[in-house]
Length: 137
Image 1 (cartoon, rainbow, N blue to C red):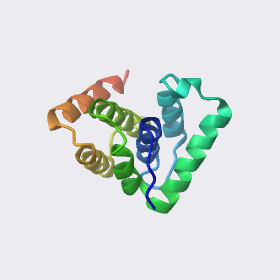
Image 2 (tube, rainbow, N blue to C red):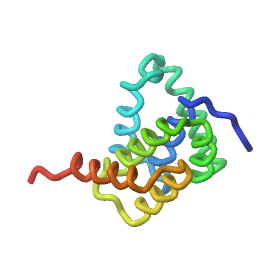
Image 3 (tube, one colour):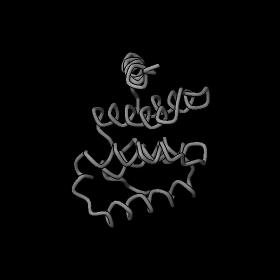
């Protein structure tokens, strides 16, 4: 099943796939996803119903296609700049519940390849995530 995404839908799809890549939707990840979308245009102008409709539709696609296929399809709808932002949001969501695990790093590496991002950019983003999520203890 192939769907043509708008840039906004593609962006949200990448974020959702990052949250649910392993079939689990953690509470911390769900909060991170909602935050990533709530303040960003065009999502901040969506009603609760519109946001629920978007996420429900994407969840349905995620269940039928799987996270990797959803990311590939979504990436095609994004400009190069949006792709970098989508990667940063995916990394933020994956970091929301702690240190990146080996599987999460692999998913992010695959996402970077799908998004056709330079390694220097993804390395910088991941370094910022390490600082942003640094312990205060």
